[in-house]
Amino acid sequence: MPGPAVKVTAVVPSVVAVGESFPIKVRFEDRDSNPRAPYTGKVRFECDDPEAVLPPEYEFTADDDGWHVFEGCRLGTEGVWRIRVVAAGLPVALSNPVACQSTPQLRVYWGDMHNHTQWCDGTDTVEYVYQFARDQAFLDVCSCSEHISNQPPDWPIEVIDKPPASSAALWAEEQKQTQAYNDPGRFVTFLGYEFTPSVMSHPDNADHCIWFLDDNHPLVIHDNIEVLGKMLLEHEAVMAAHVGGRFTKWQYEVPAEVMPIVEIASMHAHAEWFVQQALQKGLKMGIVAMSDGHMGRPGYDVWARHGRSGLRKRAFSVQSGITAFLAPALDRPSIWEAIKSRRVYATTGARILLYFSCADAVGGQEVTVSGTPQFHIRVHGTAPLDRVQIIRRDRLAHTFELSPVVTGKEPVWDAELTWTDPRPLAAEAYYYVRVTQSDNHFAWSSPIWVTCTTGMDPAADGLPPWNEDIWPPYKEEDVDYMPRIKAHLKQRGCDKRFVELEQVGVFEEPRGRYVLVRGRDAERGMRPMHLHYYLGFDDERLYVSAGWADYGQMSNI
Image: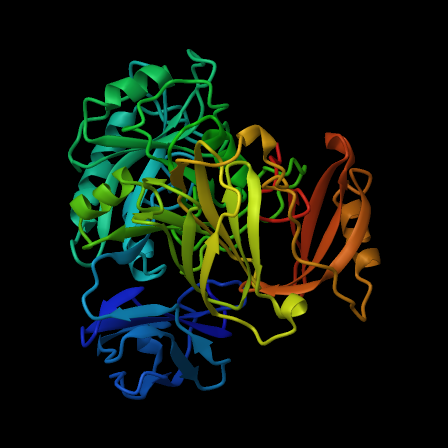
């Protein structure tokens, strides 16, 4: 239940045509990022585009229920714009960036394809998941992919605090609601489920999501993940592995056509390490992010809890991730083709615009070049950009430093960058981009697989490892929060587990201010760890994860 509004959020389409009508979707949020917080007062809109057509000043009343959709907006000048929202009594807010183009070939649509309900171990109904995704998270694409066990013949759902139930009733409900809420041009839904193994008939049985193009498709499942992958080849279906209760070790054979994508972030954690494992094995996959949400909040599960850190009492987790689909239209066939073509990228929940190309190839594609490959990157952030990095295979190839603490210049929200690999490999190599914002949001492009006709021996690659990078740097603070943090860790019974702790500084992300601490995990081989201790809340909020950086530097299992 939302409390009083403390901020306003505006969501606009990421790509529009010059003069095209589009909506501005506005919601008010409380201190805990709950949408539809009650607000009464006047709101006005501003944009630097001199040709913009924006809504007139509007006065919110209690009848608006903390949100409103303003139709009939237009931009008249090509470029990338942000719309300012000035709400009386609240901080001025910026919309996500919107690219205004003369004739857009591909649009950027946002979705979350992995959500759970009260049918198993979550809250709310399948219908509510779709309603929240469309009307509160303002997503374009969604799927309710509930757990289904791989135990024949009923393929049961392990319902919390209830006897296991047959999946037949759930599947019928998912078919019904997926059909009811699919609205091409406005909101696209997909029928799917999460393969949740209770039978280990294959050593790599692990959590995977499966989706079907047909919203009336019968359930296709098997107790063996490898057999299931081959069965899905006979259907219009795709699957994706993710870091959930169990995660694959990538020791199986699944047709590439069936598994074109892999999940890098969810409410569990950021998991670039997991994607690297797949890519290093030679698997060609686009990179996506989803929520794996269990609280009925697809696309905007901000204060989720998880058990990945192994704490006795679950700590808070990261904000859930979302996927950008690059498609010509918002309908099932177009989004499906984007998935199959790996024309996707991932963020940790922010609607960052990211374009990555080499020669004639974009993220998800393959290309052969003669000479040295040149890469082009455009990033339009939802906050100032700290770094844009290029990873080649398992190595960190290049870093563009954009943060004022490094450059001494003003914050950068938009960057157009070019980089030529000075020493390419004489072999196929995947390259992808990692974006780090100042507010601790990340974005990852899908890889481009580049084959160079000439280059150096891969064995001579002397670049640093992809996960050696650590950010942010230390900041001087007037307050030492370590006594307070150590007292909280002792109260939680983990003061002897997390050792060699050092305060890095106080930082800000959309959900609040936090103290960043780095240290080591004595229960897990003294591996590096970090935690966020949040300030300004009535309760003590803690996020703990592995590594000294937060992009998924290493497994936290």
